Length: 110
Length: 110
DNA sequence: AAACTATATCGTAATATTGCAATATAATTA
DNA sequence: TAATTATATTGCAATATTACGATATAGTTT
Image (cartoon, each protein chain N blue to C red):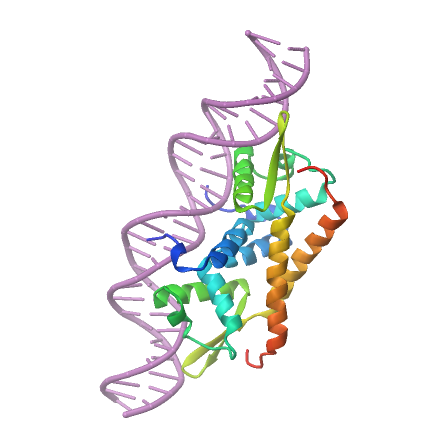
């Protein structure tokens, strides 16, 4: 046991879960917020911003990239990471759709 | 090691990470979507909807509840779970804010 | 009260995640 | 080309997550 039973869920459910999971760590939230704050797509000074060692940050960046939350371009010596706007749009659309459905429901129970 | 260094991040970052982490499993996404689909806040037939054993579903429900994504009311014998609209609103607001900032930025790099 | 129903908790095995030191890779500068 | 700089990968220890059988708890019905 211990393995998520991915095959039993829909592709959409798995996709959202992967995105959410990627955001499910404060270091990765902090990376996203830093990328949003910085004017240009600043590269590896993310390491200096975070209270984690370089390999750890590199690992978190990899996970964000795998999930599609950020993009990374090699820029000479360094790498330029930035937010993938499409994925943010997906998230936004998902929660807006849920909100809409909840409004229509006007549940009276809990 | 293996422990998240929670204390080094802001409260907001940790809070969002907890919410996102709770959604970071397809079974929990499926539970949310089921609660949204069903008209009333139906109780424990969630187990019948999911391809997982009852204790596993109970555990996932607990995690969703701990994170604040759902609420549960005892209703006689059974329990009535339903979506916590406030938390969805938080998520929605967060991604709308990011989208807005991204639009203003109009980054030209990646 | 006894049987039944609905849900939670315990205990445990399998696997995944987190974090980092050490090291590798690859572009840049001296 | 040797040293430097920026980032990734490897390997590993500590911890967390996932899943479920067995069992507990608590309300309901007979």
